[in-house]
Image 1 (cartoon, rainbow, N blue to C red):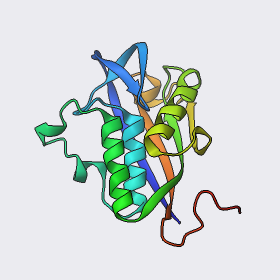
Image 2: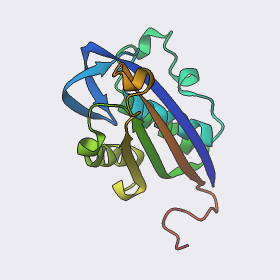
Image 3: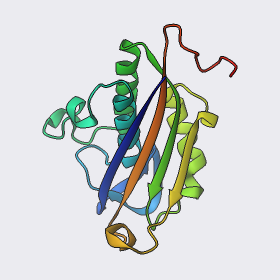
Image 4: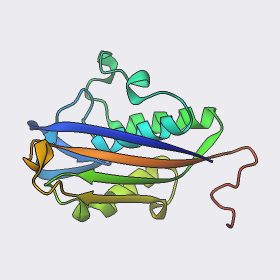
Length: 167
């Protein structure tokens, strides 16, 4: 088993729709970014790539490459899953913390758990999404954007404990 950690942050951009964890969130400014700006997906991607020693999101989907402009981050996450599979790893679980003053993450967390689990091929019970505020401090507290932390556990598909094995 291996563990990876991911992080992403973006400023809000009034001209874009907000998508977090593959879930559109109406009535709120979106996130600036080369792709769709889904900071939840980006942090999870970095956590998964880190767990298997495969670099970072920028090394696989560089913002300098026009191919990824406006890309759906759920597609990038699915591509990341294929990188893990080629290395003989499977996702066991992911844990995500979104730090923002708004939107309220607890309202959309169940939908994000479902969507992330669907793309990762794991049940929503293996995906945790929670929100925290920054208590009004710093650029996040001022409502300029948000940050996301993610941790992922992966297991070898070759003789590992496997996600279906009893503890």
